[in-house]
Amino acid sequence: MSISLEKIVNLAKRRGFIFPGSEIYGGLANSYDFGPLGVELKNNIKKLWWKMFVQEREDMVGLDANIIMNTKVWEASGHLQNFSDPLVECKKCHQRLRADEISKICPNCGGKEFAEQKQFNLMFKTNLGPVETGENAVYLRPETAQAIFVDFKQILETSRMKIPFGVAQIGKAFRNEITPGNFIFRTREFEQMEIEYFIREKDWKKSFDQWLAEMKRWIKAVGIDEKKVKYVDVPDNERAHYSKRTVDVEFEYPFGQKELYGLAYRTDFDLSAHQKHSGKDLEYRDPETNDKYVPHVIEPSLGVERTALAVLLSCYEEVEGGRSTTTESVKEEEVVLRLPKA
Image (cartoon, rainbow, N blue to C red):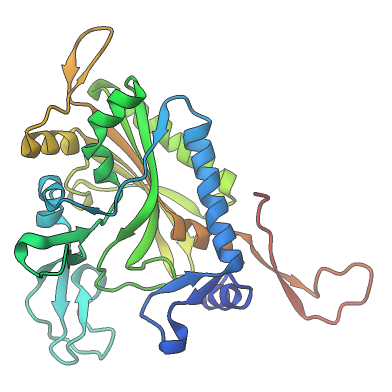
């Protein structure tokens, strides 16, 4: 059945899953709070992910890193230079829009003239301490991954893991999106469930396929409708600057087929970049062969909010006449959420 986004939004608010944020003050654009049932749904999603990919595996460990990091981290990773979207401004209504998501006509006013396109960095900037200076500038992390790379050597030494192994983290990330929207699908504050899986370069194709299979296993386990999921290889010119191969796991949302998850082969880009900029040795020495090398990385990246939305859409059902089998139903239809048992 076809489900409108409006039905899910209304159900989520009415049943206590998701509320508009700061509502008594008029709200805040694209800001949402998870209510009593919503927080349980989110927690169950995160618990299942942690159980499947950390607790039930011997090749995984966890991390809970700080949201604010040294600015040099983002310089080394390339985020300060490359983490941006193309921005245009309508000359008629001055609405600012993502250039890659509009046609030749402004969706706000119908205008056809736009200012020259420029790049807009998506990182939230703030200051550390009471004085606002360039030296005190820091950023809210746009992804959880970089802390894993920065802490790689400490994790390796304290956990005594051997390659191949992975580090998992669940945490908040922040992106100053130009055009957020579609309920909780794209917000400026969101939660990620990410894994950085460290491997030898020669094993990347095998490891990539293994993690793609694991993501398919996850989709079934969490209760997402597999018939609405597609796996799309991202073309070279559309991949992130660090990726050699990316598969987008897309879901059939009411507003179109959009990215649900991502699986990327990040090569040795991140560890090599941090090794170069920090001057610290981030190589791995194989205890059996004594070979020393910079590990390559496979990254399965999942969003908690997008998962929650996909689960709600997958489990939503309208039962004509209601579910009652013992009495004559007085309902035209009854809305049921057939959520899998946690």
